[in-house]
Amino acid sequence: MLKPRYLTNPYLSYFNLDGTVSSSLESCSPSKLVAKDPLVQEQNTDNVQRKITPWKCMNIETDLLDTQRLSATKEREYPGLIVIASLIDRLPNLGGLCRTCEILGVGKMTIPSAAAVKERDFTGVSVTAEQWLPMEEVPENQLIQYIMALKSAGWSIVAIEQASKSVPLQSFQFPEKCAILLGKEREGVPVEVLNHVDYCVEIPQHGLIRSFNVHVTGSIVLWEYVRQRIQ
Ligand code: SAH
Image (cartoon, rainbow, N blue to C red; front, side):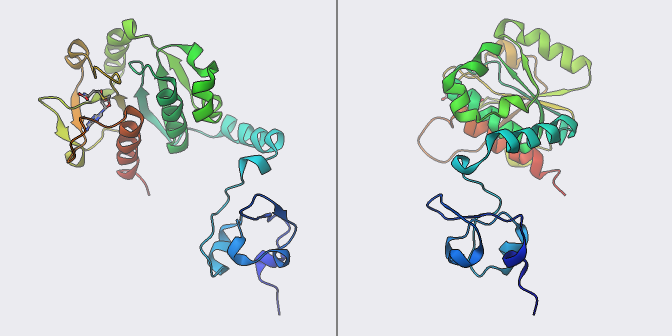
């Protein structure tokens, strides 16, 4: 009788949840498996994480170099999608948004200053996403000029803001070539910038708190753009 694949596949590593690595399945109970192979998922009775290699077990050099080779040839999944984060000040929000953009296949992200990606408060959340996601420095004082240039090149500018003319997210069909503009953590999107956008979209709220965190907002909206296209 053939051994199940996860008993014979030499490329599988079995990471126990305490971070130790088991050389083979026999030496760890399936319930502790963190399997790297999707097939294991099907054959295991327990629901285990797939492919998640705990960071401390990653061989950063080889694993990331492989990613680099992959990303150097891999087209971005959504090249028409740009996230304009030039109004965001707080480094953890920028770093988190960079990570979300990279994971969801966003084409490009703008930031207010290129220096941000060197800051620990950024890299602590971005976990190297800035090395794989195309990024462009667009300071706030060049934002309107940048928006006008994008519009001339065929992009639709979609501000994400709680504004008098916002449309609810669930009713909005995102254009393919779309630049999503997020606002300042405290003041939001300035009115002089809002006057230059094509659409304004709002995430319906039901609680008492005034607004979402800006990275959370970006994540919800980006997923909706992807959801409208995912095969
Ligand atoms: N307008 C907010 C302040 C900005 S919140 C307030 O009065 O509290 C920071 C940014 O997060 C906003 O500029 C917007 O881009 C985004 N944001 C937060 N909650 C949102 C929502 N419910 N709908 C759309 N955008 C939101």
